[in-house]
Each structure stands twice: as C-alpha cells, then as structure tokens.
Amino acid sequence: MKEQKVSPFVAGTLGFLSALGPFVTDFYLPVMPEMATYFSTTPSLIGASLTASMIGFAGGQILIGPLTDKYGRRKILLASMLLFVVSTALIIVSPDIHFLNLMRVFQGLAGAGGIVVAKSMATDLYTGQELVRFMAILGAITGIAPVAAPVCGGILTYITNWKGFFVALLVLGLLLTTASFALKETLKPELRDKRNVLHVYVNLFKVMKNPLFTVTTLVQMAGMFVFFAYISSSSFILEQTYSLSPLVYSVCLGLNAVMISVGSAASMKFKSMQTGLRVMGIGFLLSCGLIAFCILTRRSIILLMAAYLLTMFFYGIMIAITNAVALDSERSNAGAASAIFGAFGFIAGAIASPLTMMGDYHVSTSALVVLGGALCLLLTKMMIHLLNKHTTMETQRNSDKS
Image 1 (cartoon, rainbow, N blue to C red):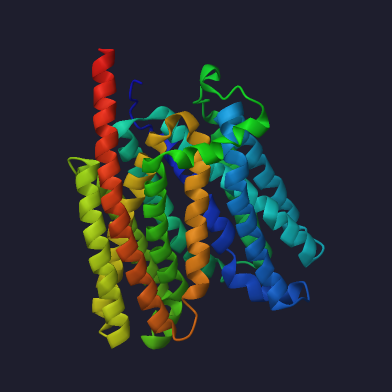
Image 2: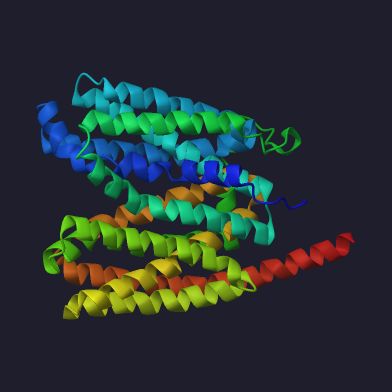
C-alpha cells in the first residue's frame, strides 16, 4: 500500500470524531443537579443518564466495528452521525427523565460509531510510521477530550442551562456530520467482508487469536486503568486533600491534557516503535510509583503535579503506539479490531473508576496506579517480543515476494 500524507482536514475530522465519546459522557456533568430539579427526579435517575451513555458507548463499538468491514466506513459513519443528531435533538425536548435516558443510549451508540470509524479509516489510509504519525495526531486530540469536556462544561454553566449543553452537542454533531459527508470512502469494495452479517461478527473473536493484537490491547487496558483511576480520584485528592479551588483544579486537568498531546507527538521521534515502547513502559511505571509516593506521604502539590504530568506524558506515547500496532496487525479486520480495542479500554476504565473510591481513596488510588503501571511494563515487554517477531515475518514475506 502506498502511504499517503496526513491530510489536515482528514486528521481534524477523524480526531474530533474519536473525541466525541468523552463529550457525550462528561460534558454535562456540571448541570446534573439542575437536571434533577428540572425533571423533579432523584439524583440516581439523573446519574443513570451517564450509565446509559456508557452502555451505548461500549456496546456500540462492538456492534458497529464489524459492520464497517462489511458495508464500508463512510455509510456507517454517516448513519452514526445522523443518529447522534436526532438523539441529541430529542434529548433537548425530552418530556421526562426516562425518555432522556433512552436517548442517551442511542447518543452513546452514535458516538461509538465515530470512534470506531475514525480508527478504521486511519488504518485504511496509512501504514507503518505514517500510521504512527496519524495516531499521534489522533491521540493528541483524543487525549485532551476527557479532561477538556468537564472543564468546558464548567465554563458553560455561567452562560446557559442544561438544555444549552445539549444544544452545544447538537451543533457539534451537525458540524461533524457535515464534515463526514466530505470524507471519501476508504475501504474499497473488493476488500470488504463478503460473508453474511452473522459471520462478520465472528471477526470479533478472530482478532483475539492474533497474539500481537491481544497483548497490545492489554497494554492499553493497563494504561487506561491508570488513567481512569487518576481521573476518578483527582478531584477528591486535589480539591479536598490539597485544597485547590475548582478553577485551579480545572487548570491542572488542562496541563495534564497538554502532556498527553506532547507524549503523543513525542512518539513520532523514536527511531522504532520498540524503542518508544521501552521508554514508555519504564517511564510509566516510575511515574506511577511517584504518584503513589506523593499521595501516601502528602508531598507538596508541585511534586504531585510533576508526577501526574510525567505519567500523562508516557500515557500519550502509549496511546499513539498501541493504536498503531494493534490496528496495523489486524489491517484486514480493521473494523472489528477497532471495536475490540476501544471497548476493552472502556472496560478497564469502568473497572478502575469505582475501585478508586473503595475505603481510603488515597490508599486505593495509590495501589491501583502502581498495579496498572507494573502490568503495563510487564505486558509491554511481551508486546516488544511479539512486535519483533511480527516485523521479522513481514520482512521475510516481502523478501519472498520480491
């Protein structure tokens, strides 16, 4: 496959599509109490709206990924974006909380479609180091989203009510739908899966038979386990333990988002992906250990923030390289691979988030980030071995062809 240059328009569109998920789940968090008052309902039912979107987000990746391998990327993307627009519009005019929660499932499902298709299209368009570069750009955009969404939401509370939040999401959806129409189909008809729909879903299990893909997926799960443990407990640690104001806390989250982007960009500077993985694995564990040390011993906020920033830097490297390796190793099943890869990352976050609040959150968070960092290093060593083996086989195969 002839490598293409990374188009700014394609990179921007796919980047914002892949960042849609966090805005679906996190953007409206500051106005949840207001929504409870508006609908005269309980906080638990309002909280269920978050769970509903996550159900759609997780299930949607599994459902949509294989379909893109059969029917092409563009059709599925346009259908997903149209569903996003319709479900968001219906949320704004919801008559009660139950209808709103139902629409949140569809909104999450549609957001999942954007993420799966974005990664699948990237795999169709680019190979090798060019794919790593593109994933670095994607990582820079998507790395900011989980922390940018609640920060933007916090600012928006001074301007509008809860419906205004979903109007903003509707506008974003319309813009991305328009941009999606301008994208070209990236999966040629002759490369699509010709089997019936049921057989297409067999690919979900087929990709897991690839050791390199499976181990790479586990590496990013370990990284996301640490990331969500950090995000889930950071407000309690920084605002309650270190007495930071909500505004200063938001600034700290913004700095961490910047470091994720810097790490994603830095992944392009290594001579090989193996070198980048070695640096990432060791650095990630050491910085996780520093986080735990600072939290448990109540070290200065400056040292703790330095530990957070270092961890997010290495996390950014991990995002870019693991995405590129996982999808490149299952190029013929890119849709299914993207679905599994994305869904498993979500599962890791779903496990880590509640565990951080068990018992003393200082102790639980410290234990979880160290555990995740250690698992990441161990799995990274396995990934490097498999990547070397895969590279040798590819070189031999190309040599035989020539």
